Length: 374
Ligand code: SF4
Ligand code: SF4
Image 1 (cartoon, helix red, strand yellow):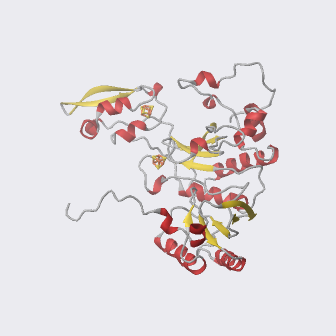
Image 2 (image 1 turned 60 degrees about the vertical axis):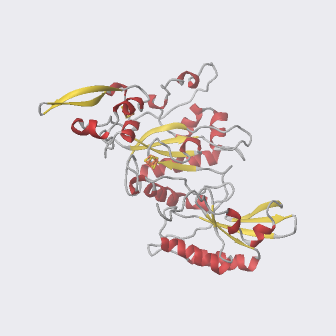
Image 3 (image 1 turned 45 degrees about the vertical axis):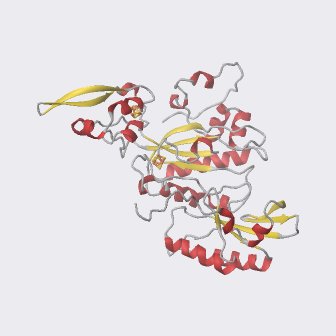
């Protein structure tokens, strides 16, 4: 413990402000988006700052960060910041530097051809996808994160670089229903799900798991304590009542002897209609609309297709300023399923504790036609 430094917290944020931000802190009068990816802020002191926003893969090498720093050194006196959706923003104070910065950013590509710093992510478009660890680093995922995000953003890059939608569309991904991040409150959410109960490794469970914790981790009370005999020795373990299990994987999070991942069982669910802002309507949770799409690495074609289908149906039918959830609620969810041509299944109907409030307790509905489940 000698010379141990602790509890020092993060560095004070204001020491990293560009001089123009420091000078005008709390004095900003207005802002406008002058083109996709470029914002102009005007202060009551008359100062102006241009912000260029670029997409990033979030998961980045130190070489990539060094390149960001090199750009910041060249155009922004060494200052740069990341946004809450893991885009990067460069600040400049004159139009000539702005032009040079944009040209430089556009010219930088990875050896495979992908843009390193695509400019965009502002206004009524699709900005970066908030996502998780996936197969890169977590032990509980049902899907990958970086791979699906890359496939979806490749397909939607035009929407990142433009502002043609009725309102901004937030896409998020979480690789299991721990939902690290924003899938529960996003316009379109990609979520990893399992479809089979956990395996139970009886021979080691009592050594690596706290059994009461395992029992308490199950939202449906599907797990019971049990004793088994292995090689003449009694061992404490658990049993899962499979008809009660809905494959959440919580028990595996608590107990490494209950693995649940399965190549064929696991896949993607799509949720729609969440938002966190209070603008016009209150914040909303996203709702399940597609219960299962198989994992299709490396390009997840079916997931990509459905995300685009939902996005473009919304773009075609929603009113200006209307978020995906506001649009779906105005037209009615049955019409949402009809327009998006999403097959409706019983899996989409809530059956958990407070489910009653989600059923229709009214004679108000529209006659619609629906796509059959194959
Ligand atoms: S969402 Fe689940 S699998 Fe993904 S990083 Fe979080 S805990 Fe891990
Ligand atoms: S996967 Fe979820 S529902 Fe199934 S037994 Fe484990 S905790 Fe319970």
